[in-house]
Length: 423
Image 1 (cartoon, rainbow, N blue to C red):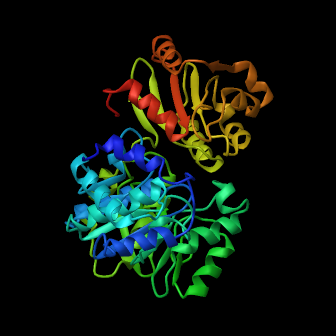
Image 2 (image 1 turned 180 degrees about the horizontal axis):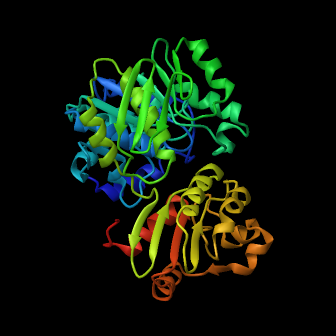
C-alpha cells in the first residue's frame, strides 16, 4: 500500500535511532544501490554558516535567467517539506517526492538512514529525472560528513564561518572551518565569500589540491553611487543593480556567487542574466516584510552573526513607535550573545516557548539569556496564537514587530498570518 507524504515523513523520522548521525558510509552505500544518480551534469555545492540560502537563491535566479534548467536542494523547510526540492523554481510535488522515497526504500534494504539522509537521496533521484543543466546543493550541517558531500561538485562555495552547531562541528572557528572545507575536491575551484576566513580552510584546500578563491584577494566588489561593481582579476561587471533581497550583506553573498559562476566550467551567464537574477532572487524568511496594521519583519536569524546582520538592518530603519521582538530559539545556540546584540534596538520582548520541540529552548531560558535590563521589557508567551493576535491588534502603524530565531518560530508565524503576502 502506497504511503502519503506525511506518512513517509513520519516513517523516516523513526527509522534511525538518532536524528543526526554524521558520516557518509551508510548514505553512500544506498546511493550506490540506487545506481549513483547524478542530479545534473553541472553541480554546485554551497556550505557555510550564514548566507547559504541567499547564495543558492542568487545562483538559481541568475542561471535560470541565462536559460539553464536548474534544480535546488535546501534545508530546512518552513511550511512544507516539498520546499526542500525545487525544479525550475517550483517545489516538487507530492507524487514525485513519494515516488523518490519508494525508490530509496527499495534500495535501502536494511541500512538505517536519518531523516536528512533519506531526503537527500530522494532529492538526487528527483533531480536526475528532471533533466537539469545545473543542480545546486546546500549542505545541511558542516560539509565533510554531510550527506550532500557524497557527490563531487564542479565548484564549491563557502559563504562564511561562525559559531553554530558546536556540539557537532566543534567550538572554535578553525575546527568549524575545516568541516565546512570538507566539500573541497582536487582540481575543483573553492570560493570563499566572506571577509574573514579561518586558516583551516586554506590548509584543507591545499591538502586536497583545490584552488581557493577568496573575497578581497581574488575577487571583490565596490558600492557605487548607482548600484555596485564586481571584479575578478581583469574581469569587471559594472552598473549592477542592488539585489532585491534586503541588507548590505547580500552584496557579499552576490559577489561570491558571481565568482562561482565565473569559475563554473562550460556555464556562461551574461550581464543581462546577472542583472535579472539579482533583482529576482528571494528567500522566504530572510528579512521578509509583511504589512499588517504594523509592519512585521520575519527573519530566521538564529546565531550571533545572523542576529548581528539583522540588527544592522533594523538600525537603518528607525521606528517612531514601539519595536516588538517575538523570538523562539533552540537551546544549543549562543542565546545570550545573540540576544544581547539586538537588545538595544528592541522596546518590548515576547518570548516563545519551544521546549516541546527537539532541542527547543524554553521561554524561561530565553528570559535568563536576556541582558538584565531587558528583563523588565519581556513577557513570556504561554500561547503563540494569543501573543500574535494581541500584537496584531495592539500594534499600530508607527510600530514594528520583528520575528526571529528558529525556523520553527518563523514558520509558526507564517502559518498564522497566511494568506498575507510579503511586500
